[in-house]
Image (tube, rainbow, N blue to C red):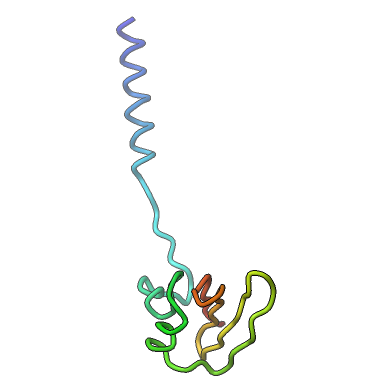
Length: 91
């Protein structure tokens, strides 16, 4: 019985150490603060324009809900109504 408890305790400790361990994946061509280089989800169109300037091109809204697109030199921003839903870095 004591041996079973000891084995259970060892298995539990080994299991917990594997849960605590984590790796950081660095994607090629990105920096840890890359999210600051483009708009974040939920920003208003006015805030995007204020922070990043006038886009190079604007695609009119299509669909329901209306989705529009603004093209900048380094990224593309997609809006639903006037809120950012996604920003993608160009290659």
